[in-house]
Amino acid sequence: MGLRAKLSLVIVGMSVLVATVLSLLVHTRTAVVTLDSARRGLDAELTSTLIRHQEGQDTPLAAGDVPAPLAAALGEGTRATYLQDGTTLWAATRADGQTLSLRRSYEAENAELARLDRILLGSGVAAALFASGVGLVVAGGLSSRIRAVARTAAHIAEGDLSARVEARGRDEIAAVGAALDQMADALRARLEAERRVTADIAHELRTPVAGLVTAAGLLPSGRPAELVRDSAATLRRLVEDILEVARLDASAETPVREVRSSGALARRAVVASGVPGVEVVVAGEAEVETDPRRVERILANLVTNAARHGAPPVRVNVTGFSVTVRDHGPGFPEPMLVMLREHGPQRFGTGSAAREDGVGLGLTIAAGQARVLGAHLSFANAPDGGAIVRLDLA
Amino acid sequence: MIDVLLVEDDPVIREATGMALELYGMRVRTASDGLGGLAEFRARPPDVALLDVMLPHLDGVSLARRIREGGETPIIMISARSDAIDVINALEAGADDYVTKPFDAAVLHARIRAVLRRVAMPGQANAPLAFGDLAIDVESMEVRLRGERVALTPTELKLLLEFAAEPGVVLSRDTLLNRVWDYAWDGDTRVVDVHVQRLRAKIGNDRIETVRGFGYKLRR
Image: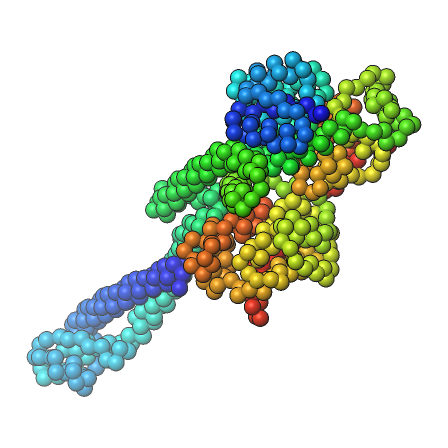
């Protein structure tokens, strides 16, 4: 149950309770006062009637039996009043062994009390309704503000570091919102600083790596030279990948869009990946307005990744706007698949022992480039084994 | 023998690149800072200048601008920076191409050959071409706007000739990269964009149209 419903229920309950207690108090007190004054009135009437009776005038005074409780309360020369069944009010006295009594209907008072009850009930219900209306509005306002804070926190957690609450007011919820905004600012500044340091380090590395790559190219051919060249090439690829991730993290990338056919994009990406023996199956081509270099980068990374971590044959399927890359290896390990679906690719796949040489930055770059393009990347395992990554371009 | 001037402050890259290019049969002169590079250039203009962007004393972009003021010697920038602003700055200063460190010596060699091919470009058509008040004499490689001679670098001329060969046809950035710069497919499209801007500044802004999502075309 939401905060809004809870608060509203409490407010409705409280207002009904207060209205009931007040109504009961008013009803009881009014009944007592009304009866008291009715008794006193009838008693005074009895006294004056008695005088007229003794003077021999004709009066409504009756002689004879009175209700038993009244008779019991009467002594010689005393007066008493009695309400019989709530409908008849008696006043009686005993003189010279004879009981003289006066009575009248109590219906007028009962009607008056019933009217009062109706008014009390009506105003009680109205007050309760009004209170619950106000309660709903207030609780609704509170809960929607809290929800807004929660939504913003979720956006930030998903990586949108520009999300802010921008709460107005001076209450606790505004304070929580302001604190969240402050946290997001600090987080953003910190990530930005980290990204810049990463980019600077990678930039600084480019010069010595360039020297290494060029010098290694000059070594006389042989196995040692081959080893040095391979290592230099790996180092170079790594530095470039780190720089690309840093650029993507800066979210300063803008796509340069041109119209291309999806099949041609896939074929070129496979050539660019340099992975031999990749089969491209085009079931249907579509003309896409997209950044061809980024699409090729994504697909080349997926193909390289499939070849490195899966098993051949690696197959690329093109159907309209969507391109799937699948291999025939063991597929993504289950925990990694869950991670990919929930949080996207993790850099270097730290903590996953399943793929001994780590996942590198290939998937991170593919996902980042897809984000720049507004394209969608999804991950699955084929029922008969093998990892499937699907890129939806539109 | 192709005469290359390499201005690079990192000694390892300077020496290794020089040796690699010499293995490709080029003659390489080197300088380690911008002023040294300018002096070397003035002593004897090379066939092609390779300039690092970040140089002591006179940075590579300024050096490119100075070289461009004095002539049409092809310039290839070499840089560890590959952010859009760095690439565009260098190209706007007059560079013909841009190579990011680290590079393969083979790639650099290919870039040099490509830029030199533009200088020694054979005529594609013998008849002079005319588009309104813009006249292109392919034989003498002269371009005149309202009778005035327009100084174009070989790269700009080659770009204009590609447009002129198919007036009114939209040429994609990749097509232009391939035909003018000899990139198979992996070039940087910003090279095309900056050169089109430069060409527009020289022959009139409205002559080359941008077709969004497709590329550029020359107005008939």
